[in-house]
Image 1 (cartoon, chains in turn orange, green):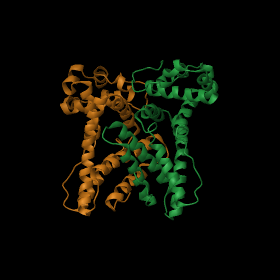
Image 2 (cartoon, rainbow over the protein chains, first blue to last red):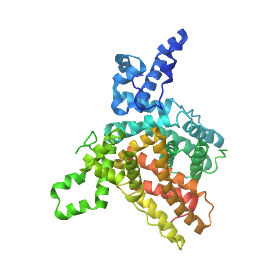
Image 3 (cartoon, rainbow over the protein chains, first blue to last red):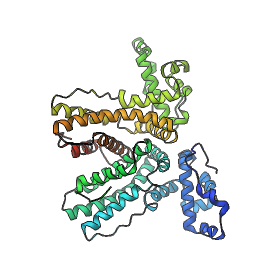
Length: 225
Length: 225
C-alpha cells in the first residue's frame, strides 16, 4: 500500500481482499461506478494517511491501482478530486431520501432520516475525522478551496433546512430555518469531534442531544433515543 | 523564522519586533514568565506551520531563539510541552475569573464571562484552529495524548458546569449539568469550526446562538447580543 504512512488506524480492506477476487468481482471492479468508488476510497486513504501534501494524483492512482490517466479521466485535477471526495462523503455515502411530506409524521421522519445518517458508524467515526482534518486545513489556507467546499456544504445545509422547514410548517412554528440549520450542523460537527477525541461518550447520548437540539425549535419529535 | 513553512497566515510578530528591543524589553524578555510565554507562542507557531511532525524540541527552541536545554528546563519533553500549549490556550490566554455568586445576576455574569472569552478574537480565530488541527490529529492517533489532553479539556467542562449549575440553582431548574456543559462546549467548537471554514457568518450571530443554547436549559439570561 503506497499510502501506508504513519497512521495505522487506516487499513485498506479493498486491497487486502484482492487475492480472493473471483471473475465476477473483477468484472464488478471494472464497472465505471465501482472503479469510481474505489478511487474515492483510495483518495480518502491518502488524505487521512498523508494529509494534503500526499494528496496527489500520482499517490491516489497508486493507492487505487489505476493509471494516472484513468484517474484524470474520471476526476480531472486534484482540486476536482478533492471536491468529489467531499461531496461523496457528505451525500453519496449516506444518501438521504427526501419524500415530500403529507403529514407531520412524514416530515418528522425525513428529519429522523437525516439524523440517523449522521450517526451511521462509517460516517460518525474517527477514521472519517482523519479524512476531514486535512480538508479543514486546506480550507483555512486556501480561499478558493474554502469557497468551493463551503458551497457543497451549503447544499447539505439546504437539505437540513428543507426538512426543518417542513416540520415547522406543520407545527405552525416560526423558525429562522437557515440559521437553525446552520447551527444544527455546527452542533453535529462539534458533537462528532468531541466524541472522536474523548473515550467517555457513546453515540446514543449524542443522538439524543441532537434530537433535543431540534426540539428546542420544533417542539416534541417523539423520538425514543 | 525557522518554522516559516507553507502557512503564510502565521507570522510571528515577536521575532519581527526584535530589532526595536530596548533594554527594558530585553529585561522583560528574560523574566521567566515572559520567556515561558515566548516559548509557548513559538510552540503554537511550529504546530500551526509544521504540524505534529515539525513539533520537536529542536524546532521550537529555534523558533523561540532559546537553547534546547532551556526549553527542556521549562517544559520537559515534547509531550509535556504539548500539554502546556493546550492548557495555556484553554486557560491562560483567557483566564475566567470565577466569583462565587450571591445573586442570580452574579451567576449569569460568570456565565457571560465564559462566553465572552470564547469569542475573544485571538481565541475564536482561524489562526487558533491551525494550532488545534494537528492536536486533534495527534489525539486521534495517540491514545495516551488523547487521554491526557481530554483530562485538561474536562477541567474546562467543570468550569462551565459550575457556572451552569449556579444559574440553575438560582432558577431552581433541573439541569443535567455535566451533560449540558459537554454539549455546550461541543456547540461552541462546532460554531467556531464552521465560522472558520465559511465566509458567511459574523461572530455576533455565533455569540447570540451560544446564549440561545444556554437559555434552552437555563431560561432567559437577559443578554443583548
